[in-house]
Length: 412
Image (cartoon, rainbow, N blue to C red; front, side):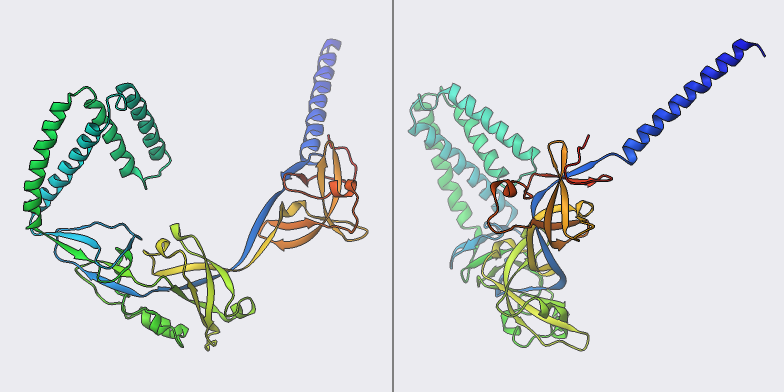
């Protein structure tokens, strides 16, 4: 073999060795000598128990009057005795006439508004700006998925467009149109009154469209002495309801009866205030433990929770699986891997990143979660400002992964 080939082979081997060493050092730094941090933040954790049960209320079913019904109150709306809850139309024609009546009333109100304001107040340029703002607000609501006030926003936009179209219309023309609409309105009112019936509230209460057949079964009267088996028996007595247009919840105090393991008695007692986490928009409701039954042979108890708040958020609910939070824990949340023990003293602590150094901060363990801990700094009496500055606070960075850490170590 020629000497030149040996030189080339030696150079290639040297180059290969250099690459291996480079990647070896890189791998060591990444997997052995690297550091990972996490941000500390204030957090509240709940100790919970799962429960299944039913919401119990005082309710009055509203009987319907036919297939052509129009409910005029919203879900969860409070109504007084005698208020109109729904309209019942005797024919399709009556329904169409009523819709026409509402359209004429709306147009009449718009024209009367325009007539009562001066031309300066109805300036087209100002209206154009308001229309642009209304369109932008409508677009923002749709993009955010917020549809609660969509009808009102659309109505306001229609009003602005209508007013702009009549900005330069003469007063005589507007007056003539108002007179024509008033005449048309009077005729429609006579037609509608003779073809439409109303359903009035027999009592005051909160309206709900959800009629489920438990209105006369799950009432506050059954709560006294109720047991887990008793609740299950009541759940099997659901009645068939037809023709109802809704119901009125007539008492502001409502209840949730839930089956729980007997162990709940170690955490809660009658009179305690707990958080019951419902599904969906009802969310977390603060409720009082009304009573706890004796344990049955299966080791279960029936717990009655009560509340006089949050009624309107729960009108659509009945059977519910919930989480009952019997205790809350406040502290600073850190990843479980960040908590360490001093090998000499056994004290718990974390290494906080202070500038370019690892700083040991002793902490007290408050609560253990699935993959995190809640902690707080260990305080001493008469701490100096320098000592107080070393306390762990929300927003600090703690080291989650790192080898050979010690107080004051420079972290590169």
